[in-house]
Length: 226
Image (tube, one colour):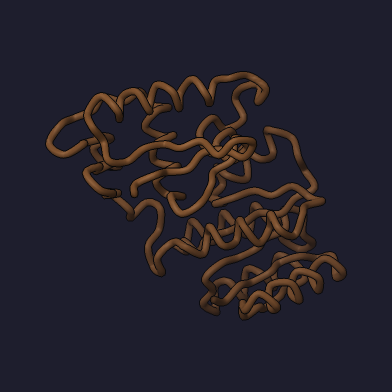
């Protein structure tokens, strides 16, 4: 897997390059937005790790230019800007994930691994259906079918189930759901996630779904389909 790191801080850039190389990734680097954009456009990468604040061209400009040109390479944004507005802005400009500095290397590697699981050449927008056991989630029709039975979902329930299915090989933390499903629009200390998970479980159980949502105590949730 080939990764492009666009980071102006030399220490951070070299640290990331070494860490990813040790994990078996092929790594190229750029020290400013202009060079990063050129490399992303001219070369083929499986993933881009993009700093938010860069000289010459800032990270959002690089990201917007890539997306407007049809480049769907997964992008993980790194940023010292940790406000809700900045995170939402990064995601809405086309970022696939957003990690705040300083970060733990283990979390960075985990997020990269998640993004790397996306089949080559297949963007999120091109994925129209997810099938697992007797469950079919139709993204275009916004429908959930369990066998031949239609299950009505509220918008947040649909988005929650979709995210869990897209990450079915891992445990999904409450923070990840908070970021992806609710766009930081509520106090993370509330029980809104638990309430929605409970409702979704009930609906799946009522139609004898072979797919369940399991709880990993103290960590988060995972899809169970054994």
